[in-house]
Length: 185
Image (cartoon, rainbow, N blue to C red; front, top):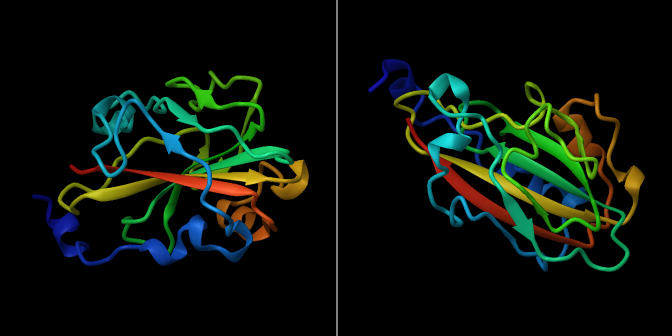
């Protein structure tokens, strides 16, 4: 076990700062979000972890139920709520065409983004950043959150820092869903 991870074991950003809990992203939980790579609450496979921990840093395949009428775009956020920081680490921020109901594996990785997706700034750049928790820190929860937004301009510019982007989104959110995967080193 890593000494550094052990020393920080009790420090976690926590669920309270999750995008899901921001007032501007509140809404009915009427979408369904899933992945054939892992079940809700189950471990994320190594292939989807960061390269520095032996993974391929390939975004997992995702699918969801159709967005409700009036949806202009979808906002997808992936956050690590167990990182030993003040706020969750944003591993992915992207907008997706309202007509889409799935993305294949790797579709959110830089360099392979389909035309229906616009990558926004995450904590470190843009595009999918795979799990790579501190060794010995224990299991981390990675929460994929999907929001159906009524206006295409509801999300700030792609260069906006993730916390500012999330705080700037003003509802109403027409529907939302979440999927949690875990990863531990």
